[in-house]
Image (cartoon, rainbow, N blue to C red; front, side):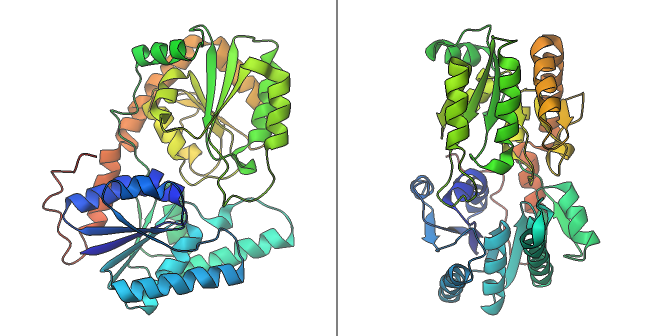
Length: 392
């Protein structure tokens, strides 16, 4: 079968969809990636995958969306894929409508978070959420198989009439790549001149406002003088397609104030090594689907501090694998960070529990099994080679 895997940006295709593309190809299907142009596509192409680029935009620009839709429509019409598997909100809508109009035999969608669940105030936010819901509801009617990375969003899909048979699949990572490793921890720290006594808080995310960076920087700054052995590592970058306030001024001020207690690592390929080298993972987001970074941190045996929102609140067991806090609360975040810094035994126990829970819920193999159960319902889909996945 010819399968289109559609995402809006190269980051999503490379970070989230590439492992699935490998698995589908191991079943001897022709798998083609479809997304906006970006530098990370070369890494996907280097593994022998064909990638088609579409001018997706991450905004409600009518002209921009029409251009992307038109390009996607003609690509699907010319290529005639057997399956179009769409991901993310905007690209998910455009791909499903285009596939439906082109008569694609099977349309699949994986929801990575609903835009209508995003927080916001004012008439513009209300209109945006309403439009998002209407589009999701309408596209649900032309979707043959509907998956969600979060259990809560599977419940939303059914409760709100978006789809009658949503399937929770989760997010997964390789449990052998992301795992605790004390030797790797010490090697990384020595090679980067970081003392073993330092207590490292780590965040891995795009550098955008809704990840809670203002609260994180403010909370960390409030306790940094009292606990000089703590460090904050910020890993990630701002994508060209990201919009909203720039965080440059916030980060520059933090660097001036905190000095060596804060480190900006930028975009990294060795996230697994950074996870091994850290002590506590923190993600005080305002909105999420099911964060892959939390999955990676849990598998790496880290205790997690996050906000009690969709996604993190089903990943984290409060007081057992980490701490869940109110959204936007700087004081609660500062207290949580200080408490974990002062309680190494609790950190150790939470990290152990995190790893155990992730192995049950978010191991890559477990999540692939859930996805393949959906694909196996498709007439003519052959997974006879699934037991022999390709090594890349």
